[in-house]
Structure formats: structure tokens, C-alpha cells
Length: 436
Image (cartoon, rainbow, N blue to C red):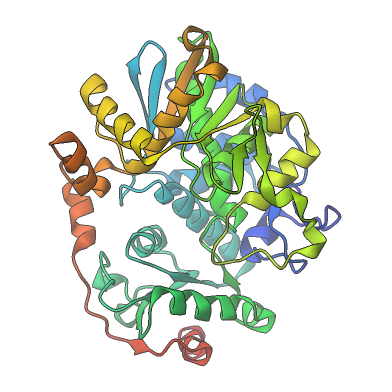
């Protein structure tokens, strides 16, 4: 699979190159360079095909020019000892649960796949790589779990005071592991500022083989396309109507992954999401991307620490103009809409859902004009374990979801061994220390 940049379609690189050096020097974001017909693979799968097998087969189909089928299967098998689950709520409503990974967060899937893929590439090329990330606890725990026992990968995790949690001391670099957590004497904005300064320094990227573990890295984004094939494999023999996915906007990672699935020939009729100031429905109900009025060449570089994926959405819409009207359906969801949806999921279906999933469910109800009620099947994409929204759920529903033991353990505080000032040179010292 060829990869190109959103800012320069002639900037073609391999998949391996794109995830190792995930920041195009033209300031854009890496994207699949071409549409691909994966329908023969997609239709071969069924409800008995495991998620790891789906991931392995699709990886092989997408990047067969770089990796053998055996390596692709190995990458997926090691990445996914866990799986999503598709639950039927009624005749026309299903819920795709993405919270069955080690931290109860949908990020587990993308980060675990990226770590497995990077480890194989680095082993083949006899290289090592480092990830620098800012964490409020959740992201750090995901990275630590995914990087566990990886020999070619290291991670520096920046925390604000008192926010370090959920890490095993055996994973720390000074104990023989590959995770270097550090407390920054500053706020979260300071952490992002210093990390951004590191990733804006091309010399440091090349010297320490720095890459990213967020969705700016297409190796983190690509596995999110597997969610939709997994859902379809469970639906195709019992659902004979239009299929729509309802998902929360967030940074548009799951939406753009869904659109890539469509570009890879997955049968899908549309994606319903909550409106934001950047992506919303116009007076006719058609999707509008606000940033499109500003030419890419007049914008600054895409932010490596805060990937919005809006730029990737624009590329899909520009390449396929009909997509903006025919596949993406935003809805203006108010706080009241979300809380009502949260309560309805509990009272009607006896299901707890996190706040983002409630927003997605509210959006699907508001866009019943698209799904035509009886003619459309909705797959509600549930991002995180409902216990991560425990307090809000109890407030609105009167009951709270039980937090599983493995998630509860991630809230145990860690005492920082290393503290730094929010300065670029302080992080450079750590990079030098762990790489030499």
C-alpha cells in the first residue's frame, strides 16, 4: 500500500516508512494513496472469524508488497489477544463495544497494533525507535500495556504533578523495562508545548528515530478500519438492510477510519456523528467541513500532538465530492440530548454507555431522516468502558456500572522518580540517556 501526504500527493512512501517517520516534512498527514478493493477478503469473513484473523488478513491485503502473509498474521496475533464485541440491542440497533482491551479504552486497539507493527519493522531493519507522549493517565497506561516486552521500542511519558498512574514498576527503564515516566513541573499545556518543540525539531526526530503513538501516525489509525469489517462479518448473514454507524466526533479518528473502510470497498451506507464547529450540517442537512475554505498551502503544519484528522477528512471529500453529502451525516447534539440518550440506553436497553457513546446515540435519533427508521440498521460505536463515566452515569441513571478489577488497577497512583522543568533541553537529556 502506497502512502502519500495530504499536502503533496506525489510524496509517496511505504507503509513502513510512514509509521516510523510519521511526520511528512511538507507539514501534512499521511494517508492511503489509492483506493483498494478488499471486497474478496471482506466477504470471505464471517461471524466465526476472529478479530485478530480479520486484522491479519486485511493487513496482508493492504501491505502485501512489504510483509509476507505470515508476518501480517504474526503482527495481528501479537497485537490482539483481545477483541471488540458486537451486541444486538433490538432488531435494528447493535452496539460495537471497543472497550474490551487491557485499559477499557478504544485506544488499546490502535496503540497495540502500532506497537506490534513497529516492533516487527524495527527488528527487520535492526533499528530502535522512541515515542514521546503527554498523558493524563489513560494514554500512558495504553502505551505502557502495548509496549510491554517490546525490545526495539521505548516510550517517554510526560505527566503533570500527581497524574501519574496505572504503571507497573517492572516496565520502567531503570528496572529493565522500556517506559520512562517523568513528572513535569507545569500544567498540561506546558507538557504539550515541550513535546511539540521536540517533534518540530527534525534533527532530533532523525537522531533518536522519534515517532508518534497518536492518530497522526497512520499505523495507529489504520487498525481502526478493522472495527467496521469485524462488525460487518457479524452482520452480513442476518442484516439485509442499509447499515449506518453512529459514532462520536472526538478527533475524527474513527470517522476517517470508517471512510477508509468504505474506500477499501466495505459495504456501508453512512456515518452519523455529532456536529462540531469544524464539521457540521448546513441548512439542508449536508455535511460541511469549515476548514476547507482555507487552502492547505496557506495553513501551518498539522499539529503532531493534537491530531484532529480534519485534514484527512478534507482529502477524502475533495477526492470524492459526493462523499460529503452521501456518507457523513452530522447532527447538532445538545447536552440535554446526550443525557436523555444516556438515560434511554439504560431504561430501554439496560445498558450503561460512556458519555461519547450517548452523544452518538443521540445523533442517530436526530438523523432518523437518513436511516429511514425501519429500513436502516444502526451500529452504535461504544468507545470506552462505561465505568470510565461512572459518576455521570450514576447522576443521570441512579445506578453506576461496576469498574472491572483490571481497570480499577489503572487508577493506582505512581510516585514519580524523575521530575523535570518544562524545557526542551530537559527532555533532550532523557532522550540521550535512554538511547546511548
